[in-house]
Length: 441
Ligand code: AMP
Ligand code: GLY
Image (cartoon, rainbow, N blue to C red; front, side, top):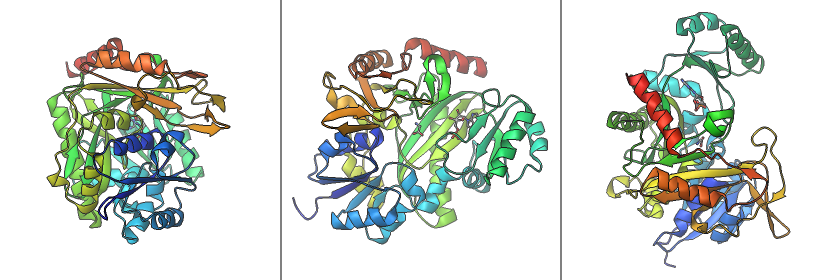
């Protein structure tokens, strides 16, 4: 190994980080991977020269491990360490980081910060919104929105702080009651217009100035077939060979890329700092163009598994370029293939998941396309720990063929598990297309 070979510190231990580790392992560059996880992920450990578990949100602990390992580059997988300033601490110690500093990660951690940024910098795609720290004025604002409103608690709530009219809230009285609950819990909140359409995600690699966009992907939040059941971290996702999605058009894609770019530009103007990392734009395609549902300051899980499986460019080159602001000189390319990712999750997930049961992955015929999530090794046996267990990705020329591969692979993961049979199927995609056609007239 030469002095130039990067020593990469990966922070996090879920399936997203397993996808990062696999992508790094495919690099042509000589390198060393060291991992600081919150738990022991055997898939990542196998690919790491050193692996420790600890408090990944503790900047001191992470920085001291980074020093000890002589890390030359860090990648922060999840949002929680971004919120506590792990990236700031590593930069202070001279280590470039893929993952924004705390103030910039407020794009994800504070709904109010994001909506204000969009309003202050005239960024298009922002639904009507208002921020509240008491219930004063809530009723009036709800009246102005009519039947279509969303209440979002400020701060990181793991997706559980958002309540949507028609879905979770069935009257202004119910909405008001939820707002009062938030006030009682000392939480501020945003109320905004409910957008009607189909959701998709637009991810960009960002070095603070240059953005390199990825193919759009659609995630599936609901636990059960046909978008029924409780919200989850995401049950699966797909992308198309033409780097579009069947229910969106070129305008939607161009608008979402431009909004991502404008947000990075606005953040730089507002804070004087470059947003370095992955920008995750959560969009809704509507009959009036795209609307921003949320931003996240990291890769999506499961979407990362689609995108890094399709990435042709060396991920280490991209990460190094993010760190030293030279992303403009890297050609970021993705395979012209469709991808379908499916998660295998414990029976009962997400509300009362089975825990600590054995999982067998020994018959998975394409282990490169398998990603381990909430698992542990106990006495040499792989066990599921209760959250999303493992994901597989199918890759092919069409979404239908990729779905068939994903379905075959996910069935080779055995244990007390279930997955969504419909993700990536023609029937579900047709439904999305019909819905958009109907909205667009
Ligand atoms: P968030 O945590 O902001 O992504 O919200 C969680 C989910 O709530 C999103 O994935 C959407 O399905 C829904 N949602 C959030 N904001 C809106 C909105 N303004 N209009 C419609 N649905 C929304
Ligand atoms: N794909 C959902 C998330 O990562 O938040």
